Length: 161
Image (tube, rainbow, N blue to C red; front, side, top):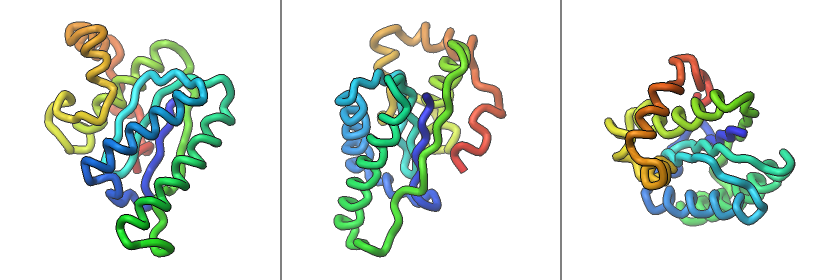
């Protein structure tokens, strides 16, 4: 599944780097703790994408309900906005149809910081699984994978809105 979670009205609640780092750790460990296999991820200032496999879909909803609830409470308290701000809007899910769809989704995830004009180079954004693939498979594999499974301009249309 490709999971996308967005901050309410795309407010940049995850803008502070320390918050993105902490959320990245919490997101990954929360799913690893329930036996999910994490394929790829990216954390942006106002949303995230997570590509994973799980035993049952219900696991996703349960984990995100807890994760979104606990982070909303904590961040509102940190920002002095308890009871005044809605943090998370929703999450959406997409089941991967085949290996090509999975690879395109992974490339879409890794390219997302460039798509949103946060950086000019995918390697300049540290809140992403890109570096695990670089370490494990190397840059040539990443470049070949991008050429073979480059997402079309319509891939992900409306997901980040």
